[in-house]
Image 1 (cartoon, rainbow, N blue to C red):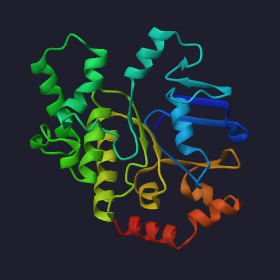
Image 2 (spheres, rainbow, N blue to C red; image 1 turned 30 degrees about the vertical axis):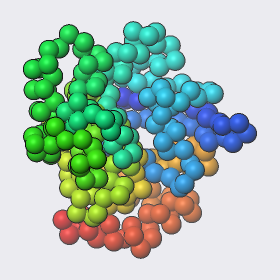
Image 3 (cartoon, helix red, strand yellow; image 1 turned 45 degrees about the horizontal axis):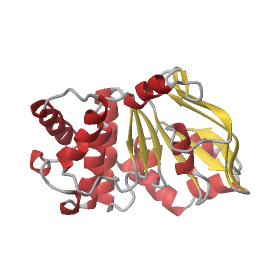
Amino acid sequence: MSDETVITVRGLRNAFGEQVVHESLDLDLYRGEILGVVGGSGTGKSVLMRSIIGLQQPEEGEIEILGQNVAEANESEYLDLRRRWGVLFQNGALFSTLTVAENVQVPLREFYKDLDEELLDEIASYKIVMSGLPVEAAPKFPSELSGGMRKRAGIARALALDPPLLFLDEPTAGLDPIGAAAFDQLILDLKESLDLTVFLITHDLDTLYAICDRVAVLADKKVIADGTIDELLATDHPWIQEYFDGPRARAALHAKERN
């Protein structure tokens, strides 16, 4: 992890009618780190991610990604930014009428319209194997895959354009403990081998302990604290104490120590 800031959020405000989700929210993501983003239900974790990638228009605030102010970017600059990040939405969000290979090819066809079919197939096969799926998964439809395999297919699509930045929204939700641990290891391996920076929304304490370099806690409409888990435990906020010092957190810590 370096001191180079990949994402800077300052003074973010998101509201839906009279319901204010974020107010004066600040956040930094540094190059080469896996940042875990946690918070209780309704704290706007996914809304924050959607604001950063441009799917949610905030009412106030500034967002800078890879040195570019998103609000000031023209259409060409914003498209260039979009090429430089990949997103795994909850449950994979694959197109049900496309095969795994065709799903992986979607961003390639959008941004590189002149690629021939043979090269598209080769790139898709490579990304599928990179995500931990067998090459035989390429012609299958999402409905023919298990939940864990769909998530891996979603990772393959997110990495199609070789982005330096990866957004993951609850990547281990719905997986059994063995599958979740394997997926955590996949994320860590990809981060190391591809020099990725990762913004990871999760409620999975095992994931936080196993692979996150730093954790940002959303509460009271903003990021109330960020740092390592040890640093967070030194704060006196009741939600942080309950979340990171409860029975499940202690079990996750013991599991990490055993490994």
